[in-house]
Amino acid sequence: MNDLEFNNKKQCGLWLMLVGAVIVISDILGGSFLINPIIFLIGYYICFFSVNVNKKVREKLSQGPISKFQIKMIYVSLALLFVLMFGIAGPFIPGWNWRLIWLGIFLATAIHFIPWFFIHGRSMVILAITDIVICVIGSKLAFNKQA
Image (cartoon, rainbow, N blue to C red; front, side, top):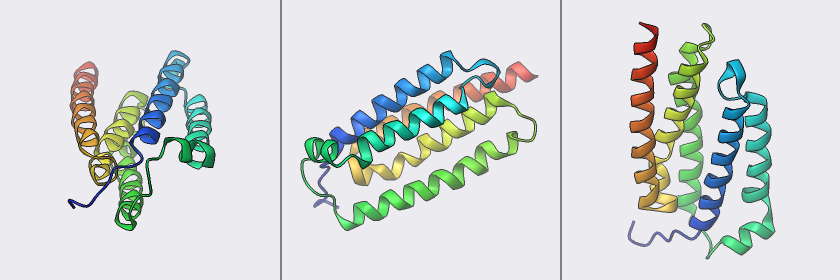
C-alpha cells in the first residue's frame, strides 16, 4: 500500500466540484422531488463525460497512471455504490418519500467514498466521514419530522 500514487486527485476534485454544482442546481429546481432527478441525471452524465471520459481533460489533470489495484478498487466501489443505493434508498421508493430517498442515495455515495482512499488518498476518507455525518443528521431530522 505504500507504493500507491494518487495521480488523479485533480481530476477527482474537478469531478466532485462539478457534481456538487449539479446537485445545487437540481436542488434549486427540485420542486416536489427536492432534487430534480432529470436535471441531476443530465448534469451528472455531462460532468462525467466531460471530466472522466474526455481524454484531453484526463491527460491535463493526471500526474501519471493509476495501478491495476486502483482500477479494481474503482469497480469495487462502484458496485458497492449501487448495492448500497438500492439497500438504503430502495425501501423508501414505494412510498415516494423523496427526502429519505435522496438521503439514502447520498449516504450510499458517502460510504462508497471510503474505498476511494486507495485511489485518491486520505482526503476521500475525510470527505466520506463528513458526508456520512451530514446524512445521519439529515435522516434523524427527516424521521423526527415524520413523527
